[in-house]
Every structure is written in structure tokens, then in C-alpha cells.
Image 1 (cartoon, one colour):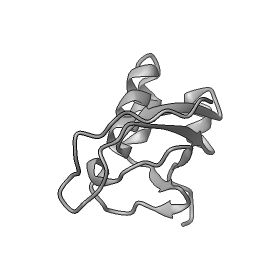
Image 2 (cartoon, one colour):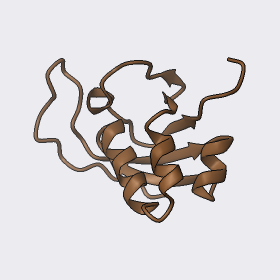
Image 3 (cartoon, one colour):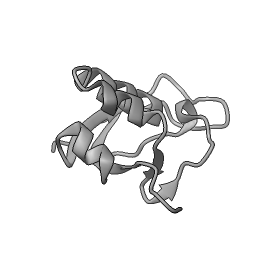
Image 4 (cartoon, one colour):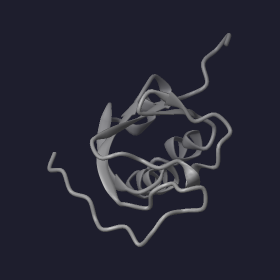
Length: 105
């Protein structure tokens, strides 16, 4: 994967970056099964943008698209939790882990 960062028009409120970066989305368990792949690249500034792009790429898989709305996410090994996904900045070469709900926990 080639590293590229577009110039940022500025910062979001709270000082988070709006730079577009590249990285990898990794799908686990049911998300992997529904996506039909284990991982794919992203090119986005925020978690929300990366997920929207994934939904567009997999529009022919409606169960996967719906599943993304109820998954938990780790960005660079940090839990996203209830944070606004538009405010979760991504890093160059980073990773988004897509974790579907698991039975029993």
C-alpha cells in the first residue's frame, strides 16, 4: 500500500485532523463472512468516512451493510465505544477492526 496524505483544510472542533489517509479495515467473524473478505484498504479522514465507503463497495451485500451499523470498532487498537464516528480520526497506515456482536458477551 502506498502512503499518501492529502493536505488538510484544517482541524475539526476539538483539534482532530481532517487529513485523508490510507490504512486497512479488518473484518472479524460474522463481518468477515458477510463481507466475503478478511480485509480491504481505506482512504478516508474519519471512521465514518471509511465505513460509508465500505458500505458503498459492498452495496450488493445488504446484510453486511446492516451489520456495520451494530458492530464495535477498534481504531489503531483503541476502542471507539460511543464516540461520534465522524470525530474519530484515522492515521496513515492505521487499522480499523470491525467486531460484530458476539454471543454471550
